[in-house]
Image (cartoon, rainbow, N blue to C red; front, top):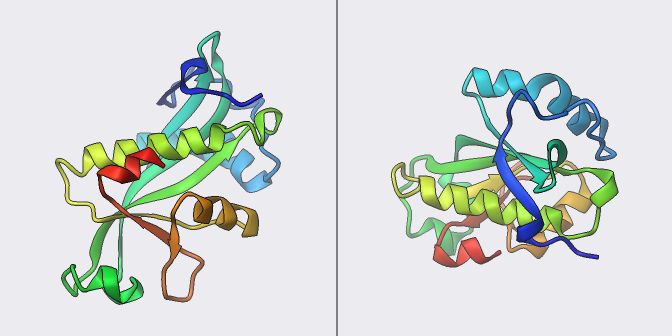
Length: 171
């Protein structure tokens, strides 16, 4: 059974959310939501958004983080870079995205990604943002982002990007 947007709510991380019971299967992501996410929010290093059930607003089903970054224009493909200035390109960083293991492969990852893109598009109406970038944690994450239209940047990292446009919100 796949989830749909009507069965979950995506909201900013708050004190009432039960971070201790979240398990996605990746210890680094589990540790982040338990130990660091609140600090990142308080320090304005990242905004953390969580998915919760409409029936249980405390249990975390998934989460993602957003923050500001930039990418080197020369790391973008030529057809994208030619429309942009040669200095660092303003970007949003989708730093982490994780789904509780109990909901794996039910569509929540795609819902979280679409919400992150929509939030970034909304922010881009006020602050210049040309692309959204991700740093896939492993090959499975890289495949997930690729399936949603992200492309690899040139450069030493696994970093991927999606050019922002109105159709990006449909991912």
